[in-house]
Length: 383
Image (tube, rainbow, N blue to C red; front, side, top):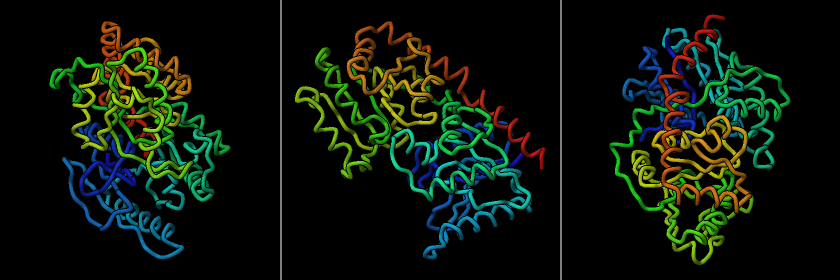
């Protein structure tokens, strides 16, 4: 079987910045390779048209067509021609695209099935954020979903919410984002006994970063030794227009709490594991996710999590067993849950071990690769 992934991002120095979509594609690609599946990644929005190999994965960079007013259409048609040629030459059997901005809305290969995996469209995230969505993005995203030959969602919550925001009644195969838990082994990394609380991810409103200072203020009042470590790129706030979410956060910390905060900025991906291991717990007070890989990475490294209690979180974390789920706006309860982990080492250790076990049993690539393969086979068989 030969599978292609169409994506705006991929974790490689040649392809530029990447986020959760790119990470999840690479995790899945590695798992598929191990099962004998050939994988090609079509990365659009690139500076040049070139193909190279990344540890057995073929990466095909696609340069967008530049023509005022028609770039979006011509680029899609260019991608369509590439897919048709690859399928005609028997280089691919199926192509998978993301729901983000509906890149596949005007791509209809002649005989190659095209499926969409929900990781959260712009319309989906705007709905969770209570923000206005650009009509053009919603148009393309809905059209892409309507024309797809198959649909996957990384969580049931995301599937249900997507149907609601687009007024659809589509059936989605639920397959969570995978992680290779063998790459996240605690024994190979340095332990740290400090009361470090780690957040890693973009500093952005939708991930609850404007709630986190108010939560941490209350933590420090009870536990003055607690330290908050922030890792991730600073992002412009889309609502206020402020160019720095980090600057907005600083104004929210108390004088006592700000002394215990360390912002490291963005760090290389290969250093994230060490930062997780050096923490006692991880916090994710997010308002908008689909099925975040960052949570899986923390869980795989046996870190208890205090996260938001919205939709997708209940499909990842068992409340009170491998973490706590709290409304990010309930600052008192959120702080209380963090303090429970900081002050009860046995509770923290047991929750961390349970988190690791949950990942191994339900979200490891060895478990999920075959689920993806069987779905691909069922779609290909129809053609």
